[in-house]
Amino acid sequence: RPSCPSVCPPGGHTTEILRLMDSLSSVYTPRHYVIADTDRMSEDKIVSVTEPFPKRSDFAFQFSIHRVPRSREVHQSWSSSAVSTLNALRFCLPLVFRLRPDMVLCNGPGTCVPLCGAALLLGILGVKKVHIVYVESICRVQTLSLTGRILYRLADYFFVQWSYLRDKYPNAIFLGRLV
Image (cartoon, rainbow, N blue to C red):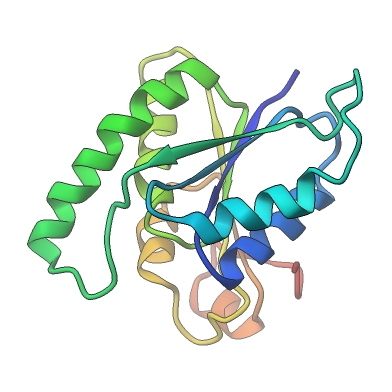
């Protein structure tokens, strides 16, 4: 079965990623949500949205939540961000090598950078090609987020939800509002 981890940041980004995951085929099950180790809000939201569905033998709504350290806190210095991102990568590597996902779906949190880095490494080492699908948050109207700027050239599919960003970033895919 195809596997698709997604990164869930706190707040509105979690709602966006859950809507995106909901639009995926049930082929992408079980679903793996990756959240920051200090994020309780996202875990509560995932459970409240996903658990009401009955557990079925075809894995339709089975999911797991994986915790990794945050790669960057709000207002954290750049130099210490590099160290904390490497620490997060240290936790993401074994997770990605164990799950061997077909696709990583993410939408903006810094936590997805080390996860995508681990996924890229899986392909570089010839273990498995993992497709990285990045959807820039609907709230990014004129500029990309820091994560978007990092993953713009690395993602296999890079979606923006505003035509202005498509014009500014020609490799971006614009289909209108996705969430």
